[in-house]
Image (cartoon, rainbow, N blue to C red):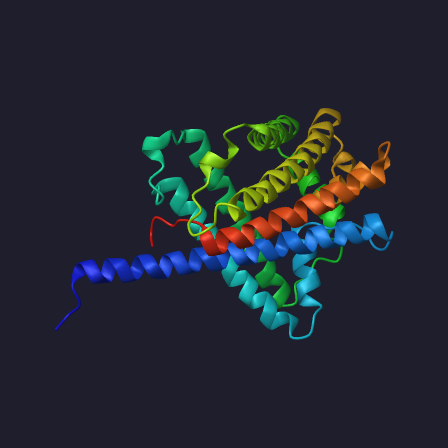
Length: 275
């Protein structure tokens, strides 16, 4: 006797939900590592801030690093798949609650970004680790972009988009109705506000870093000079050059750790429309 179509649909939904939650765990680990390395640089002055690929490289260097990184890669691809679903299928049923094309577009960009990060993890597992990494990789990519016809205009457009996304995240972080956009189930009344505060702090920190990185990219486009570009790690480090820079760097680091912790909470408590 063959399974009923309804049961098959529910089973597929549960599997997709499980993959999405696993994706959130992988994303959380990446941000926890970035935040930890930045905090270590700020508090004890050891090492330099890193970016997403640097976090993957840190995992690779651990015992059984290739196995661990392979697991993380699967999680990153799973998260990208969930983001694609959010962009095209509205699995959480938010459309009637005011979901906008801009949000769907951001989900699609996020899906592409985490797909690329998953590919980077696979390349590391296969031994194709970048010899430069971080800012040098970002400068090389900017140089390639600037070498294209109308490349500096394209660079400026991409930088403007990154800055707009960062400012949008900053607005969301300070918006009074910030908590209303997340669907978390099973959290107690006293626990949920603290978990949502973690997200607010984390989104604010991530938005600052993204806006700063976008600003450097904009400068590279305006000056047609890829040497102006800084990646995520470089953008974080640049904050330490400002007045009270070490304190700013420490707060950003703690914010990124908070974002990682919140993402872990999402992995457990987020309401998945596919569940």
